Length: 128
Image (cartoon, rainbow, N blue to C red; front, side, top):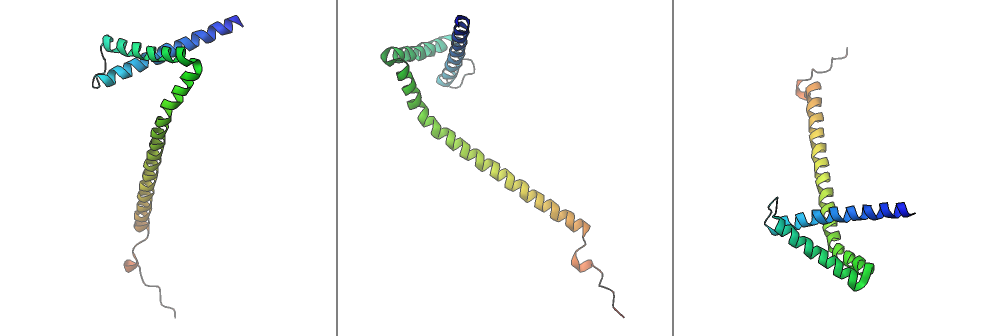
């Protein structure tokens, strides 16, 4: 019991630290015009801001407030994901259609190479 609680807490802590580090890096890159390595000052500012928002949500309404904020902020992103899925479907369909056209053209050319055109065929032999 106690060991599992400790391991679970440790894993959650590692998850939050890793996610927070990645989030501050991305926010820093976006706020500095796409610099691949924003300064430590910028990352610290973003880390303090994100941590402050998370702490204030926890103090104001507990876990329920964090869950509500997650849903509210994730809902518009759902639209983006749906648009990306639609664009992916269109791209895959276009690739499939292009491959199909290419395959049909290849089969037609191969058939033309194997079967001579009708104009060059010899007439059937006359029956006696």
